Image 1 (tube, rainbow, N blue to C red):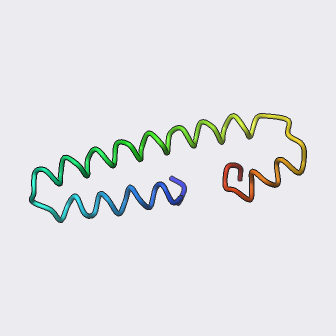
Image 2 (spheres, rainbow, N blue to C red):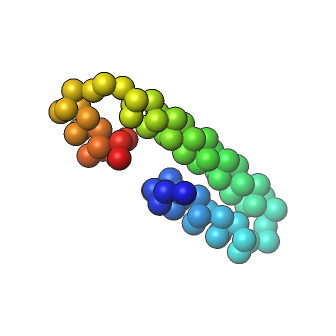
Length: 70
Protein backbone atom coordinates (compact mmCIF):
# COMPACT_ATOMS: atom_id res chain seq x y z
CA UNK A 1 0.00 0.00 0.00
CA UNK A 2 1.01 3.54 -0.63
CA UNK A 3 2.40 5.46 2.32
CA UNK A 4 -0.17 8.22 2.83
CA UNK A 5 -1.24 10.33 5.79
CA UNK A 6 -4.39 8.25 6.07
CA UNK A 7 -2.41 4.98 6.05
CA UNK A 8 -0.02 6.36 8.68
CA UNK A 9 -2.94 7.41 10.90
CA UNK A 10 -4.36 3.88 10.61
CA UNK A 11 -1.00 2.35 11.54
CA UNK A 12 -0.59 4.64 14.54
CA UNK A 13 -4.12 3.92 15.74
CA UNK A 14 -3.55 0.17 15.34
CA UNK A 15 -0.39 0.50 17.44
CA UNK A 16 -2.29 2.20 20.23
CA UNK A 17 -5.03 -0.43 19.98
CA UNK A 18 -2.45 -3.17 20.57
CA UNK A 19 -1.11 -1.34 23.63
CA UNK A 20 -4.41 -0.87 25.48
CA UNK A 21 -6.32 -3.27 27.68
CA UNK A 22 -9.33 -0.99 28.16
CA UNK A 23 -12.34 -2.46 26.31
CA UNK A 24 -14.01 0.93 25.86
CA UNK A 25 -10.85 2.39 24.31
CA UNK A 26 -10.44 -0.70 22.10
CA UNK A 27 -13.96 -0.21 20.76
CA UNK A 28 -13.35 3.47 20.05
CA UNK A 29 -9.99 2.78 18.39
CA UNK A 30 -11.45 0.00 16.19
CA UNK A 31 -14.24 2.38 15.19
CA UNK A 32 -11.69 5.08 14.33
CA UNK A 33 -9.72 2.60 12.21
CA UNK A 34 -12.87 1.59 10.34
CA UNK A 35 -13.70 5.24 9.61
CA UNK A 36 -10.15 5.90 8.42
CA UNK A 37 -10.35 2.87 6.12
CA UNK A 38 -13.57 4.23 4.62
CA UNK A 39 -11.88 7.59 4.03
CA UNK A 40 -8.89 5.83 2.48
CA UNK A 41 -11.12 3.79 0.15
CA UNK A 42 -13.06 6.86 -0.97
CA UNK A 43 -9.81 8.75 -1.57
CA UNK A 44 -8.47 5.87 -3.68
CA UNK A 45 -11.66 5.70 -5.76
CA UNK A 46 -11.63 9.45 -6.28
CA UNK A 47 -7.98 9.37 -7.34
CA UNK A 48 -8.71 6.59 -9.84
CA UNK A 49 -11.64 8.50 -11.33
CA UNK A 50 -9.62 11.70 -11.61
CA UNK A 51 -6.73 9.83 -13.21
CA UNK A 52 -9.08 8.63 -15.97
CA UNK A 53 -10.40 12.12 -16.73
CA UNK A 54 -9.10 14.43 -19.42
CA UNK A 55 -8.13 17.38 -17.29
CA UNK A 56 -6.70 20.76 -18.14
CA UNK A 57 -2.95 20.78 -17.45
CA UNK A 58 -3.28 23.40 -14.72
CA UNK A 59 -6.11 21.52 -13.01
CA UNK A 60 -4.09 18.31 -13.21
CA UNK A 61 -1.03 20.05 -11.73
CA UNK A 62 -3.14 21.48 -8.90
CA UNK A 63 -4.63 18.07 -8.10
CA UNK A 64 -1.17 16.50 -8.10
CA UNK A 65 0.10 19.19 -5.75
CA UNK A 66 -2.82 18.51 -3.41
CA UNK A 67 -2.10 14.78 -3.48
CA UNK A 68 -5.18 13.67 -5.38
CA UNK A 69 -3.19 12.49 -8.40
CA UNK A 70 0.21 10.90 -8.69
